[in-house]
Length: 128
Image (tube, rainbow, N blue to C red; front, side, top):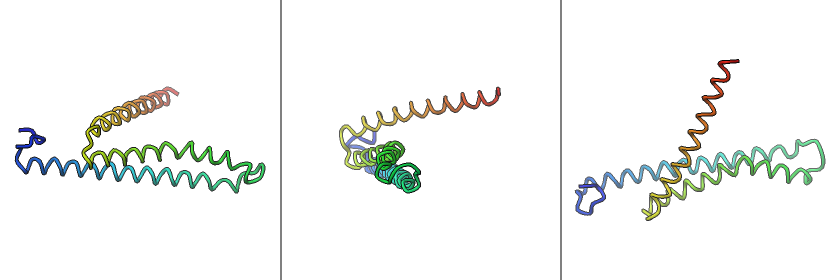
């Protein structure tokens, strides 16, 4: 009998719940880590404002805020999404599994593209 079957033994159901709790922990940890990295990146970028040489502080503010958002927004958005996925796992939402699958497919495609670029760079470095 599958573990999701209502008549499955209690041990099988408990194992499935333990697995869900572990995945909840993984998504929560990575979500908070990504939020921390995004916040740190934004804070670090805003620290260059007093050291810019041209114009006054307020004239450079828009440039620095745009730079901070460019680097930190993807980390913050992905961190918030990971926390939302962790919440969906915890609550057992109906669409949670589909959201997890779509997210992992997108991340897999992006990771494979990054690996292809890295391999191409290694090949190019060998021939130079």
